[in-house]
Image (cartoon, rainbow, N blue to C red; front, side):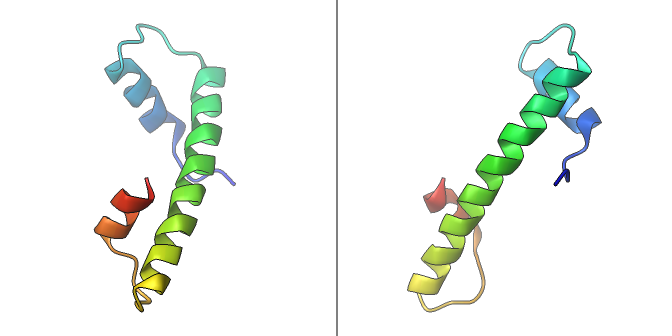
Length: 65
């Protein structure tokens, strides 16, 4: 599953201080971020469910982080 665009990930790595970024680095970051985003999303869903809501809020996501 690849949902995050590589160009955006390259910009993030450059923003973090990388002068040059390989395509493999962008792909690796995409994999890591997507895995982590799914984990956070699952936890946020559980928090919303526990609160009796069907809608996940920004606070759920922040707490899940």
